[in-house]
Image 1 (tube, rainbow, N blue to C red):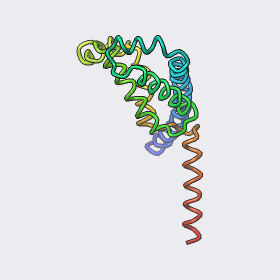
Image 2 (image 1 turned 180 degrees about the vertical axis):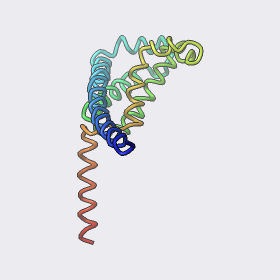
Image 3 (image 1 turned 30 degrees about the vertical axis):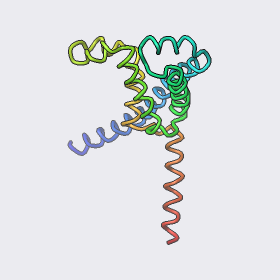
Length: 162
């Protein structure tokens, strides 16, 4: 009986592992695209965003609009591809924390007292996405995985010749 339960559990783990990679792929594509479009919008029409940043009291608003726009655009592209995923999520997460602290400050500080306000804030799904990719990686269907396979094969071949 335990052997049968163990076999069922192992099949369940295999199936959910495959589904996890699809989930990560869909998450990366959807929110990567959102980052890319948002960043492109800032870069293509910076004027209103500069004014918005000035209104929030963000220092060097012009520089920061271009910095955030470029970070979101390239970060979104890298997320879609699954390239350098765990690295690119760091500047994206910083961008989202800054967005919380400037544009959604009340929601950010209500994390414990009003969780609903925190999760309804605009930066929340972006932040959850980048934290998910940071902690779990890009998944099987990513350029990161292809690069990892290439280097692990190269390393093991060199090791075999040694």
